Amino acid sequence: MHSSGVGRPQGFRFSFSCWPSGLIPHPETSEPEPKTQLQVGVFDKVWVKFVPKKFQNTSLEEVFRLFYNKPMQDSFSVANLWHDPTHQESFLEANLFLPEYLGLVGSDSERSRRKANFLRLSLAAFFVGSFNSTFDGGIGPWQSGLFCFYDEKQDIVPLEQQPFFINDTIGLKSLNDSNKLVLRCKPKH
Image (cartoon, rainbow, N blue to C red; front, top):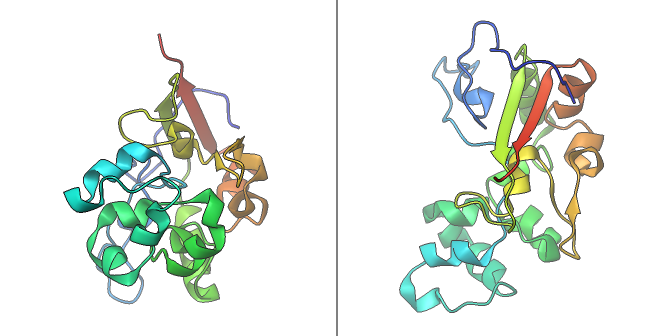
C-alpha cells in the first residue's frame, strides 16, 4: 500500500471511510448519492444489541436468519452491514447493500459507474485502530475498515486476497497499483 504521508484528494472532501459516490452527483439526476461508510461488513455478537429485545438472545450462528430477510434489510441499517462469512451465499443473495457496493453483485453498468466514480479520487485513505479483540466499539471486526475480513473459518483474510480486490470490482486494486491507496492501522497503546 502507499506508504508516504497522508494527503487530501484534489477537489474532493474525503472523510474517514466515506464512499466517494456520496460526494459526486449521480450522472442522470445531478443529485448527490447518499454517503456510506465503506467497509467489508460487521460480524460480531455485540451488534445483536441493536435488534429489538425479543431477538437479543439470538446466537451469532443464527443472526443471518434474522438479518438476511427483506423486512429487516428494508428497515434496519445494521442488517445492511451484516456480513456472515459462514453464510456467504445468503449474504450475496439477501443483503441488499454491501454486496452491491463491494461490486460483488449488481448490473455491470452500476458496478462500472461506482468504480469509475471511486477512481476519480487522487488519494483514498482509510484509518482504523487495532485492538486486542475483534470489536473496536464501532466495527466488528475492526479489520473490516481496512477491507480485511473473515473467511468461513473466521480467520482474517487480508485485502489482497479478497475477491473484490483481486477482481478490482470497486477500484481498490487500481488505486493501490497507482499508489493512491493508503491503509493505516494505529496500534492500541
